[in-house]
Length: 194
Image (cartoon, rainbow, N blue to C red; front, side):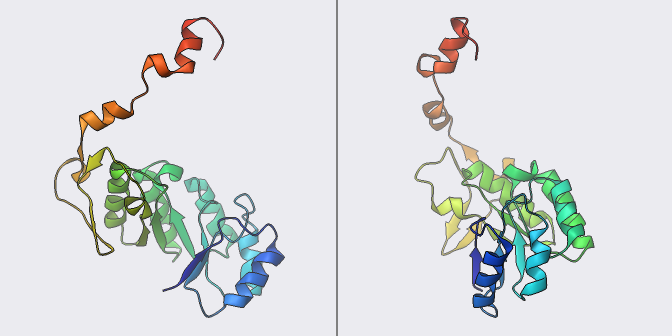
């Protein structure tokens, strides 16, 4: 399936509709065709085009998702644990969306192995989270954990405790900011306001 992510690239509903009409029949969905705060735009775009619409940057909480579903025009919700408040909130949103017949996707925000593992297990935990977009596993040059394995586009999830991820303490220590390197630390110690 072909999808497109506008990522708030269209400022007006007219711009979104003009693009959507050019790709009608070609996309499984168009992601975030409006500015994040313009939740009314989804319904307006829906009235003027047949392209399925996914909300992404507009979904920061359960209440955002509820408002989008009430207003209409949204065919899919992209849930990101870093935005929605973790796995439990994402599962609450997936429940609510399921009650209204709106499927969800589990997205990512360049998390490391630990974050990706949480996303993968959340995806596996709910039948209304139908697709994933866990792209960070193939994008990060370094990681502080291991366990999830990406092979030929398929994610293998280990059956170990801790979401299957092992953390390398030496790697964690290597990435910690030392007090001697922290401007904030020095300002606080010298009595300057933070």
